[in-house]
Amino acid sequence: MERRKSGNGNKKNEASSSVFWDGLRAELEEAREGNLYRSLRVAGSGSGLLNFSDNDYLGLAHDPRIVQAFELASHQYGVGAGASRLISGTSLLHEQLEKGIAEFKKTERALVFGSGYLANLGAVSALVSEKDLIVIDKLNHASIIDAARLSGATLRAYPHKNLSRLEAILRKSKDFRRRLIITDSVFSMDGDLAPLRELAEIKNAHDAILMVDEAHGIGVFGKSGRGVGEYLDVEDEIDISMGTLSKAVGAMGGFVAGPRELIEYLVNFSRPFIFATALPPPVMAACLESFHIIESAPKLRMRLWGNVREVKQVLLELGFKLGETVSPILPVLTGDEKKALELSRALSDEGIFVPAIRYPTVGKGKARLRLTVSARHTEPDLQRLFTALRRVRKLL
Ligand SMILES: *Cc1c(COP(=O)(O)O)cnc(C)c1O
Image 1 (cartoon, protein in one colour):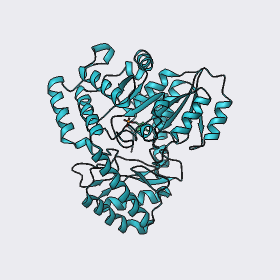
Image 2 (spheres, rainbow, N blue to C red):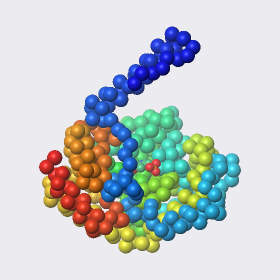
Image 3 (cartoon, rainbow, N blue to C red):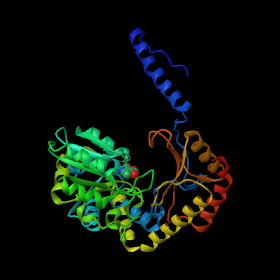
């Protein structure tokens, strides 16, 4: 594509702008050649594709009760919040949801952010800075890494679930002011769980703070759906709990839950909270309804896990490699980026949407299909998936 030259005839500007655009084009070309190019694809309602890719684990995003709560609130409260909550006052629904989340998580308080990404950014960048240390698992979500970078704290990563390396880092870092260990509870691209009990013991032994990202745990794990903390019975040991409202909760937003002082501190010092407009009140109403359902409907969770068991068994029977997943996230490992793309395309030709996951979401040469199962999938849905999987298996 030819770029028009800038009008003022300034040679120097022309040169610098062509360096700019040529640079972008070259990087895109490089991504294409490495099978790492990404583009947006229409899926979901109206696309004709059966979706096995999202994190709507309980099927609540389309639940009529939640849609109705959203609709009613939109008539009463309008669609936009108008400004950040410290500027324009907070809506009753934001207050109610935060109270509801705190009760649900059995913490003193909770604070809602614009997304899960922003909740991590908002909590971590406020709580630690140059004098402090953040220690993370190498496979933690990108939002935690970005949060750590924004905070200015020193960041150290230990190899996936390698606790002796974590301990070695903690032994050698006593001079930092604050030390924060952060982990995903369910690893989002592998579907395995963090050893939260052992992490809690380590953080106690070294007087560090433990923050757990329950993005894929909420609604899915634990008898009441409170997450992996509940499932492993270590909730009391988690100092800071973070979750999203965009996965099993089915809507949009993120939250941080913990002691009163933590939330007070974030309201005062968390820039992604202070300087961003609040989420629309109807979204808060939808989430409130969703938490009621999550708490009171173990049947939905049972259906989800029934589906997970069935799909996992068929995938293994067909010879797909799944890694160590114990969650509704079923990574079909290909290693090769091109192969992952081919499998994803072939499934799409069969009417099934499962995305190829490549670098930098996972390491180079660790490509995979990320297949997720939901309570909303019916038995005929699963049969359609199995038929498609049998047809594409030869591409492996
Ligand atoms: C998805 C995800 C987030 C970000 O949440 P959003 O609500 O999508 O912004 C944070 N952490 C983990 C582990 C996630 O999987």
